[in-house]
Amino acid sequence: MFQQRLKFFRSILYLGDLVLVGLAWFGAYFLRFYLPILPVTKGIPPLGLYSMLLLLMLADFAVVMPLSGLYRRPWAGTGRALWPVLRAALVGVVVAVTLTWFLRPYDFSRLVFLHFFVLLAAGMLVYRPVLRRFWRRAYPENAGERVLIVGSAELAEQVAQNIKKNPVLGLSVVGFLSRDEAKVGRRVAGLRVLGSFAQVAQIVAQRHIQVVIIALPLSAHDDLPLVLEGLSQELVDVRIVPDLYRFMSLGSTVESFEGMPIIGLRGNRLEGWPRVLKRAMDVAGSLLFLTLFSPLMALIALGVKLSSPGPVLYRQRRMGLDGVDFQMLKFRTMRVGAESETGPVWASPDDPRRTRLGAILRRTSLDELPQFFNVLSGEMSLVGPRPERPELIASFRSQIPGYMLRHMVKAGITGWAQINGWRGNTDLNKRIEHDLYYIENWSLWFDIKIILLTPFRGLISPNAY
Image (cartoon, rainbow, N blue to C red; front, top):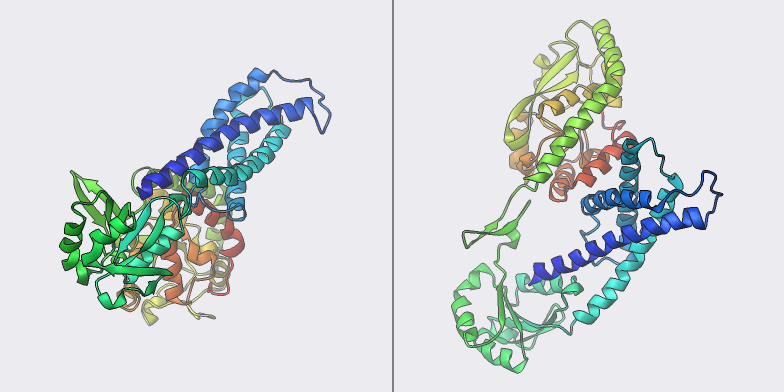
């Protein structure tokens, strides 16, 4: 019921957005050529030509809009929807303009694309509150199905709060039932405890309950047969929320396998097409950056060779995906054999082991450019948690809860923690918090956002030494 109704709302929102793409495209055509802001100097192109391009626009936005996170919070108000709408419209237009380069020799009007961007963004911002208004009539908040929550502890309270946060469901929580009869009459999360478990059938009949949600702590699961027996003769929709919330971590899922419900307490979002798309971006991005930076890398290699004796590249063992070690590449920034004196330790300000050129390379993060070869070979990704040395991880994993979860994805050249200032010898708890947030909220757009922010917030850092 919950996911179906949310998916139904998202699908209507999505289909309406695609309709708006078509309307905005034709509207942009007529604005540019029949109500022009700037004079038309090359004549009015046939509408059929732009109608054919609409097929490309629809295919473009059909992919871009979901990937940009536009439907992650479909019930968001106009203020919160502003940036996701502008982002989706802008990325879609940029992709469309890029694709039209392959349709030459005809040159499509750039002003049409500009008009289209404005019309589409405005249309989507207006469409959302209008759809919410009609949806509230179909599923009025607190006037739809009447819900009784069996339980009065933390889990039951969380269920009630989640229902309130999703008015799109149109559910009305009537109250709670408690195992402890002393709680009857008290209020939980602003709602009254209506009775005990033994009174479930009576309260369902009296209050005209349509949905019963059983949210019992593990310690009270012995009472489940009593509740289900009381509901055996009642025509109500019964749902059970297992008390596994506090045990769930990254990528928690509920799925059906051969008719058997399976609850995943921990999983990886990067499976199937997301994994393919991320790998495709890694390969394309690493090839692009290696091509762009090859002259600079050649100069750095020459500088390292001339400034101190020893190899140009430094290979260091790091831990990556699934806890598997790999050899991470860097331009050498220390004297040969420097670590034989200190062992594996974090770098420090004014590290005496550095060469003069090495200090500059570290400060600007240019020593990490060879890691694009690690990305190309599949050992790393463009974006992900920064890899750490196995010798240091041995102590971190026992000190910091959830530390090893960061190895559920490939290590990255840049990451969410790095662009937020948590790199080098900084608070490990904060760094892990940001790494886990990235893994939990991964999307292709999130990767692109981190890559775009890296030159401004990730390359040069006071903690890079």
